[in-house]
Length: 262
Image: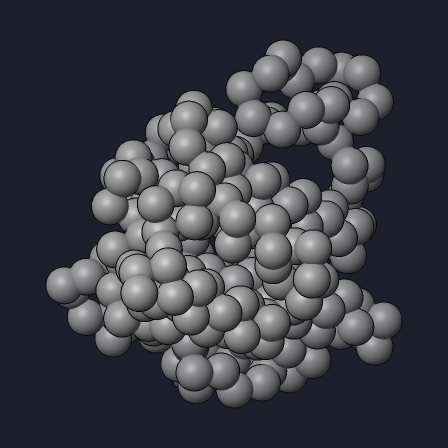
């Protein structure tokens, strides 16, 4: 009976994952489910993925869960940023923040539309795991505002976007490090997923710098705390901070002036 319940829960979870871009590959879904079950998820894991709690994380380092919960808020902020820059509505931002005129040419709008879609996919993956920002029992925060003037001009918007993506990069680097040292299947999964998402955030940062006309837009030999900036072409930029906890990454976003509204 227990085996059948576990099997049913795993099937329900895979049905959820199938609807999320990151998990559309059969191999990806099955690999994740095998790791989830090996970590002791079983029927509880299916319940968490169906949005009934976070029992799957019971044996997982709290620091790992802290990072991925914080990532839910970060992805909502990312969606709000790109939507506001495009002058389009979003459930994660406030209408007053939306750009009143075009800040981007037609080609660059394609970049930002793609970035918004990518952040939306990341958020869907995180939510499919039963995650929430802030973590339960607090009510989730879904709406965020930005500092006055952020979307008044292209230079202001692009400068803020580079800083924002720098925090995202550092947060996911921290999640990679924390997940990789958790020594269980879920920690390994988080490290892999965070690395894949972090790579996309790096793309966003470079595209923003390219749109801003910064030379070179790719100005780092390494992300994180490896090496130091120099005068050598390609290494003039200061690497992103690697945040030790999800709370530290959230604090960095707040320091930029991102404010939870509701």
